[in-house]
Length: 150
Image 1: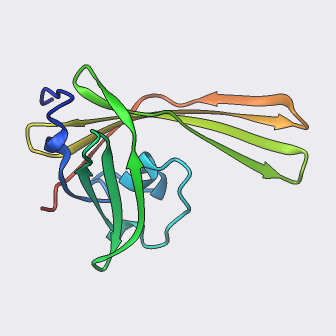
Image 2: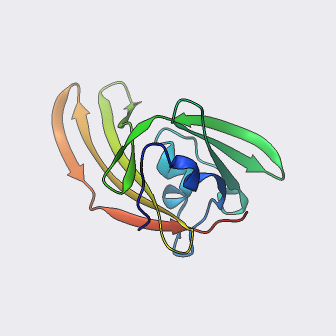
C-alpha cells in the first residue's frame, strides 16, 4: 500500500471503474461501498466513479453514466495508518411496520502500487421485531480493488 498522509490525499484523484474484476453483485460495486445507503442501479457494471480531493481535505465522489453525473457525495473522513477512513455510515429500513432493519458500514480507502483504489469494507446489521432484537449479523472484512480509468 502507498503511504498516505492527510495533506497528500491527491493520490485518490482519478476516475475508477464502478465494477471490480471479482464483483458478481452490485453490493460490491465501488459506489455501493462508499455510499452505504445508495439505491440499486440496474447498469452498475457500466458506471464510473470520479474522486477528487476537496479543499477541506475530504473527498468528492461523482457517479457517471455515459459522461453525465447521476449522483455525487462528499466522503468525510480522516487519515488513519495507510488508509483514509470514511465516517461510519448508518442505514435503516422498515418492513411491514413491525420489522425493522438497522445496519452500519465502515470503509477504508487505500492505493496500491498499480494505482488501483483499494476499498476495505465491513458491515453489520440487526433485525428488530417491533424494536425487540431477533437477528444480528456481522460481515468479514472485504477487500476489493478498482482499476483507474484515467
